[in-house]
Each structure stands twice: as structure tokens, then as C-alpha cells.
Length: 246
Length: 255
Image (tube, rainbow over all chains, first blue to last red; front, side, top):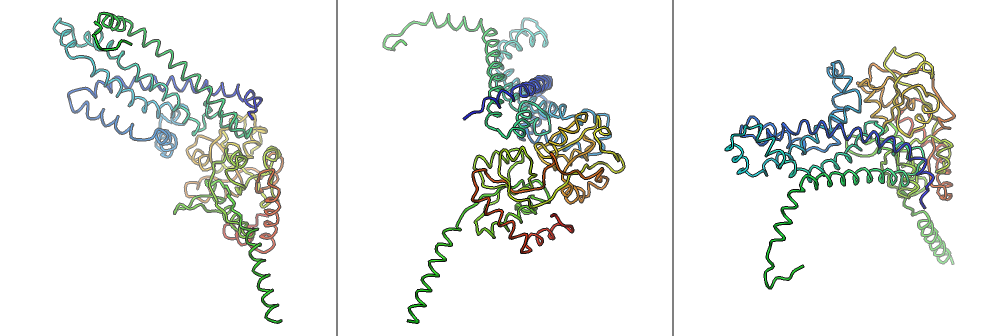
């Protein structure tokens, strides 16, 4: 039923597409993270002038489908002659940068929400203790808040990484030959969507699962001290009579 | 005697219409593209319309079939036919050898040619040598895509989902030229106000990878429907229906 020769023929081109998917994902996640950190601090700030705009940005971006955001940046901005005549046109002309801008802005909103949540999870008492010891705001952030927040944010961020990799498939709608784009081109040449899309799906699966596994390992390493502590607590727990042990 | 014969005649007639109606009561699903004006597009009211849609309806009327016409993205239109999502494709599809390996084609129902479109006065020569290093936009999986891929190896070919996307990027200046069906450009794109600064350039291209005209695609094992469609094409060509539909859209013949 499956024509393996079509899969084998398509594979090299799909791998090339996977390379593009990788480049897009890395740049999108980098741009997203760069914007997300200040956004997250602004979101948690007391001043309405800081947390107001940050909250609105996150609300708006999360409320619009990413496909539309890609179309707005690519087709929308290209419609205006002042954009086409500006110094930025070489960037907006290129579908590669359009995807990175659109999805990077998108990822920034989600990542900011994850980081802001993680920062809020850091117990107030620890921060106050650090300040009582005479640590400055920056020292408190570096030595107390950030290490704890990173640990808290990692599981949710892993999810964001996976979603971003899959979202790069939107690049295929604006002519880029990422993994999905390469697959669609192969389909239009071979008329065999089943074999080609299945192969592309398998490559996506390998990328996302191996990355997810790596991030999990990183997470475990970071929380190693934490785990031991938990185990110790468990070991010292007395077995109460009447409660079945399992 | 007279009454009896009349009764027999009436019975015979009833039987005839009964068998006739059971024989022709077939449901057909037809795919067209829906983003390819003026051939097939969705109008302001949201209904699927265009030249191909009118032709499909006329063929159904001749075949006395109950037809449902659906819009399908171009690069999945042949796989969808073979997956039995619909029974035939009426979408100005160019007949090529490669497609013939996948589907059966009806008689030709339209002649076609392809031509480049560019900003006025920018390109006179459209030979592969003259367009070296230029960016050419084309619809992915179209006959023009096959032609460019084979004949313009030194140009950068950018492939889009739909012709309307290619046209938008020509206006935006991301591509230097586009290659498309000549009539499509003439009556779809070049009639729009945004396309005022653009024109057809170079010669008309036909034949070879650009196909032997347009035909209706059916599944290869559907010989019965193919015969019906071919005879229906003959009928609308000879009884004036085809010309009437062409005149509705164009002031020149298509065959």
C-alpha cells in the first residue's frame, strides 16, 4: 500500500526542508526569548505604564491566529509603498525574515506569560531574606529569583519550543521550502500525498521528541538538589498504621 | 380496443420514464479550484462561480446528473480525485503526460497559452538567457511550474499556493515576473486597478510541458463516466451552450 520508493526519493529534499525548519525555529525562539524577558518583568511590574502595555501586547498576540500574523507581516506590509520604499524593505521582502518576525513576536507573547508566571512563583520570603542580607535588586535576581524561576518555567517552555517548531510549518504558505513546504512541492511532483506527508510527519516527530527529551534531561539536572531533598523527606515519613503502603 | 392500446401506451411511457429516471439519477461531485478568477472563484456573496463552474453545470444538465461543485486547493486536487473525494475535476486543468499517468482526461474543452507578466517596459526579452538571475513567480504544481523548472534553470523560481498570491507578490515587488495562463492574467489580474502598471510580455507559449489544452480529469477506472462526459462536451459544443458561456466572460473564442 505504501510506496517506499517515493518516500526514499523524497527524503533528501525533505531533510533539506528540515534544515530550514531548524534555522527558522532557532531564530524565532531567540527573538521570542529576547523580547519575552523584558516583557515578563514589565508584566509583573507595579506601574500601570509598564504592565498595561505588556498585558495588552500579550492579550492581542495570543488572540490572533499565527497564520494571520504571518500573512499580515508578509502580504499586509508589502501592500504599502512606504514600506516598500523604506530601508527595512530588504528584510520585509524576504519571506524568511517575515516568518521570523511574525512568529518571533508571537512566541515572545507566550514565553513572556510563562516567565512572568514563573517569576511570580518565587516565594516572597526568599526575596525579602535576600534583601535583608543586603543583596541589591540585581544580586537578588541573579542569585535567588532567576535560578528558581528558570526551574519553574522549564516544563511550560518545553511545550512552547515544541509548538514553535510546529508553527514554522506556516512558512510554507509564503513560499518558503521548510519541511512542510518541501513536502508540498514533492506532493505536487509525485501526486503521492500519503507517502510524502507521512515521511515529513515522521521527521517532525523525530525533531520534536528528541528535543523534548533533551529539555527534560536538562530539567532533571537543574532540579537534582530538589529531588534529593524530596526523597529524603519521603524516606523520613513514618508509615501510619491503617494506610496501605504501595 | 382503442382504450386498451392507449392504456398500454401510457403504461409503456410510464415504464420508460421510470427506467430512464433510475438510470440517470446519479449524484456527481465535481472539484474546481475556487481561487482562479475568471475560471473559478468565490463571488462577493460567497458562492462558487466562474467559467469552469458554468461549464460544469452545463455538462451536468446534459448528463442529467445532480451535481455538487466543491472548491479544492490546487496542489491536492489530483490526489483528492483518486481518493474519491469527488468524481471529476473541472478546473481548466492542462493535459500533460505526467498528469495522464494519474488521471484520465476527457476531450479538450479549451485551448490555452501561457505568457509572462511584468511591470510595463521592464522586460522585452523573456528567453531563459535574458531572465538569468531574475525572480519568477508561479503557482506550485501548475504546468507553468513544470515548464519553468525545466527551461529556466538559471532563474530563481518562487512557488505559491494560488495565482492570486503570485500576483500580490508581483505588485509588492518580491518577484520580477510571473508566468501564468494568458487569459487568466488578461481577465483576472490585468483588469484589476492595482495592476495598472503591468503588462503581458514576451511571446505566448504552448505545447510540450505547457500541455495540450485543458480537459476534464476523471479517475482512470471510471470509463463509463468518461464516455458520458465526452458526449456531453460534444453536446454543449454543438448546441451553442458552450459559446453562450464563453460570451458571458470573454469577447474572444476559447476553442
